[in-house]
Length: 132
Image (cartoon, rainbow, N blue to C red; front, top):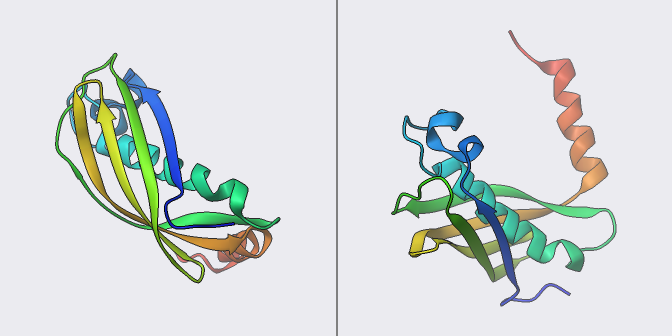
């Protein structure tokens, strides 16, 4: 059962693939902000997935974070999430990311509970309505 206080965790190592230089979000070989955000989302998503009903998942809808410290290639990163609010299908998490020296980013992340099949049908239906 979903409950405020549910925590999650995700981790990775900074490699060439997740640097700002490689992801196009900058030109330095440091952990990219989009990579940090993805790791935070992963922590939040994985924390509630086992608590959902069959056929449900969550999708990220909002992220408000700061990335306050650069991390070079080779260091370990971990992200942690805590479910702070449940408002119907809307879930609000506090998220933080750390490298081996301390906090590198933090903020608030919002996810919504959706029915997988219904969500994908709606997304796929866009293909027939794309504009040039």
